[in-house]
Structure formats: C-alpha cells, structure tokens
Length: 132
Image 1 (cartoon, rainbow, N blue to C red):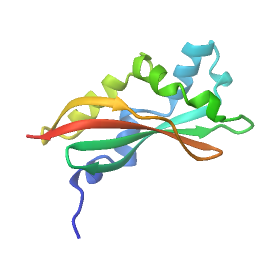
Image 2: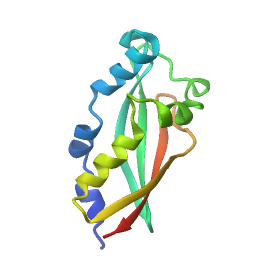
Image 3: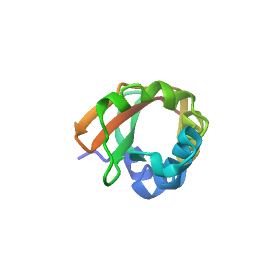
Image 4: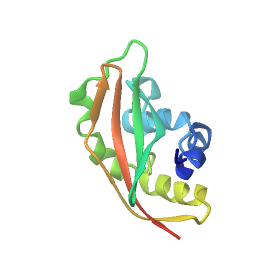
C-alpha cells in the first residue's frame, strides 16, 4: 500500500489554518455587507494527487435554514478566482509553504461546481505541482 505524502501534510487541521472557518463570514460581509446573508460555509479540503496535479476542494456546506441552490453556486468558480477574501492565489502559496519545499506549485485553476448532494457543493481547485 502506497501512502500519499501530500495527504499526510494536507490534513484537515493544517488546511483549517490556511482557510479558517471565519473566512466564509468575511466573504459574505464583503459581498453582501452582512455575514448572516450567506447561505453556506466554505471549507478547504484535500481530494487527491494524480501525476503532477494536486486537487483540493472548496466545499460549500449549506447553513441551517438556508438554501444552497445550484443556480447560486454555478458561477462561483469565476467569483472565487478573483475575490480578495477567498484569495485562491494566497491559498496556493500557503499550500506550497505547507509542503516545505518538497513541491512547487506552478499554476492553478478552479473547476466547475460539483453538486454532491442538496447541502454540499464542491469547487475543485486544481494545482499543478513539480517535485523539487
């Protein structure tokens, strides 16, 4: 059995330091002027490492008594890619730092929103990595 060394570093705890829970509220505060207007919480998670691509996930968890409709989340990859509070470029830089020089992150892109179920949507963050 092969152990994925990236999975061992990109733990839920380490990723929560890169993308803390309160960033969702900061995002909705910037977007709507009120964090309580947000319909989901955002979590950064590890998906897999295949070849030279590291795939992370921006998980959108529906908030209680809110609606996480796909028509609200389909355009988010474009919004997230440019929004300074989400700061995808900063996330990628922090992931590279977390990898402690074993990999270099050379580029990134956000994939299309994937609906896992009614209360969970995922935006894949694809990072091209090169082993140092």
